[in-house]
Structures are given as structure tokens and as C-alpha cells.
Image (cartoon, rainbow, N blue to C red; front, side, top):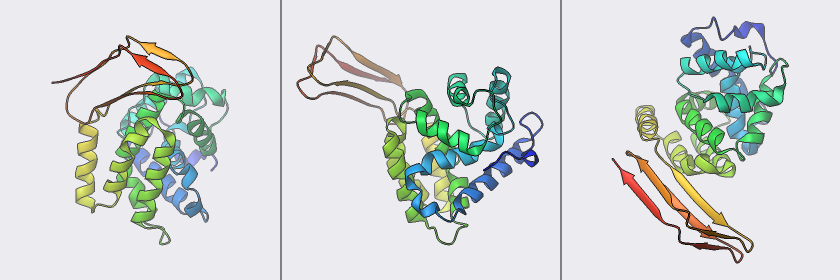
Length: 240
């Protein structure tokens, strides 16, 4: 989808304008003829569509990062400066199209823990709009959307894989229950996963894991495969 001057600019758009532009982009995404066959890009595709009204008017440059950060806040999404930079960096100052955001997300989501976590939270934040847009296509239903999102979230790994079962559940709730479920997930976004994985003949020793948090589901894991060894490593959780 091409950039369009009718989308306005981040600097002058109100929260309601940006929200409506984001919802329209989502509707456009789900009206594509081959959308049922796009499960392998469903998560980055949905995010790219929703984020385009904020990223699209910008040209990838340092000043754009501030405008994008402020625009995201208007629609309830919080991306760190680091995450915004990682999405803008591959675009090298050119005008941004929705496909560019999709490409950037496809590249970084499976590889970058911070981007993965922040994008997972963003997806939950806009989940109601995603469902509403998808169901305007009569060829789609809740089950397809729920399973498709969960499958592609799992494929991204990290926080997205952790939240996948919850997203699958909440998409299939009625509107009131879904809004409540989204609020609960966002309020308890302390689903923290710490992992030590050793493979080959590598060895890790004296590497404690410690989590301090409040609420939510907190998990840790230590694993060794293919002759790998983990020794002297402990785990602790301090909930307040």
C-alpha cells in the first residue's frame, strides 16, 4: 500500500484521526483477496497496517523518531526509541510505505527481544480493532483469526509466543469480555521470560536468573541440548 497525503501527518493529526486511519488500514488489510492465505505474515502485516498512519507520513530520520513516538502514544501504543530506530533504520531516509514497515517487522520480530516484546503488547492493545476489521470481511471468522494470530505469534518466538494462547482466547470472546481481557493482559504485562540455552558442547556456570515483578505470569527456563552443560545457575522470583 502506497503512502498517501490524505493520511495526514503525525504532527497535526489528533488521536481520533490517527485511530480512524489505523482502523481503515486494518480494514484494507483484511479485504485483500488472498488474506486467508497470509497467515505466515499475519502478525507483521496487521501491525504494519495499524502503524502505517503514524510511520507513513515520516521520512526515516532522527527527527521522525520523536514524531512517531508521540503519534504512537496518541493511539495507546508505547515503543521505545530503540525499537523505533530499529524499524526506521532499514528505510534509510526514503518515504515510507506500508510494505516497508511489513518488511522491517518481518526481519526484526523473530530476532530482537525488545522489539518482539513491545510489538506483542502493541498487538494486544489494538486487538479489538483487529477483530472488528477482520470480521467486516464475510469470508473470515473469529476462529480463523484467533488461530491465525496465535500460529504466527508462536512463529515469532519471545513474548509473542508467550502471549499467543491468550490472544487466541480473547479474540473468540464477546465484545465486553474481550475488552476486559485486553485490559487485564495489559495491566499484568509482567509476563517475563528469562532463558538460558546451551547447545553443542558449551557450558554455562554461575549464571543466576532473578526476576522482580508484580502480578502477571512470570516464567524462567534453563535448558541444555546436544551435550551442553549448565552448572551452578539458580532462579529466583520476587513478587511484590
